[in-house]
Image (cartoon, rainbow, N blue to C red; front, side, top):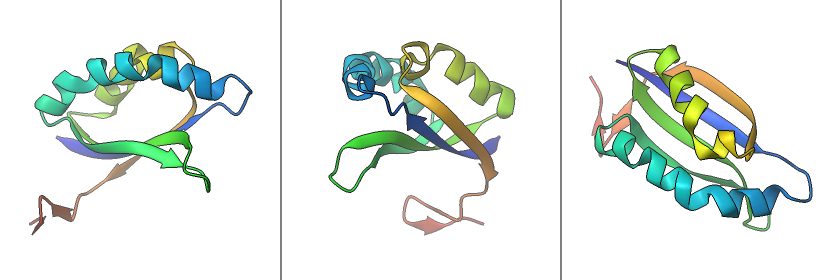
Length: 102
């Protein structure tokens, strides 16, 4: 298994916040099985200075980058045009569940 840091940025157009709000429930429903399997370790919104969401940060554990891309292909935040720029970086988790990783 490989770990990845995902930074996904929302669009900046006038409808971006509406798209995010409209896709949120479907996005959370879609990722529930991945969370249950431990593929999505932690995730949440990236906020602007006023506390409004402008993107997402996610730490994942998938077999490979192709599996990460397969997630994106069907995620409502992608298919409904919420995430406009996605950065994926391989990473190695050093601290997990309150413990230092070996």
